[in-house]
Amino acid sequence: MSTTPTVLFVCVHNAGRSQMAAGYLQHLAGDRVQVLSSGSEPKDHINPVAVEAMREEGIDISANQPKILTDEQVEASDVVITMGCGDACKFHPGKRYLDWELEDPAGKDLETVRRVRDDIRRRVEQLIGEITP
Image (cartoon, rainbow, N blue to C red):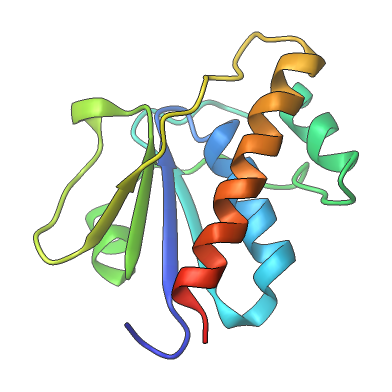
């Protein structure tokens, strides 16, 4: 792994889980990590309840735009973290893959999204300890 590892978060719509995870990693690790986020079937906009839940943490993801997952992103990443995309996500040999089983926050209330957010934060904090010096 390079001195500045690249982490790619992937979920189907790139509108909730992967955006929250990317927001946390960027916020908590700063320039020690390169952060990418995308989806196999991206939505038109980020889940507004996810935006609100992250705003409560002092992290603004409202300007982020869901992006389509590309081979280039996977190739450029040291760690690829999938979140409920099953066979829809691209896999490449030689990459470190983690699959985080997280409830999909789409269409859920703020209380549920907060639980998902807090679970993501715990996982991101653990990841930072594993991949940064």
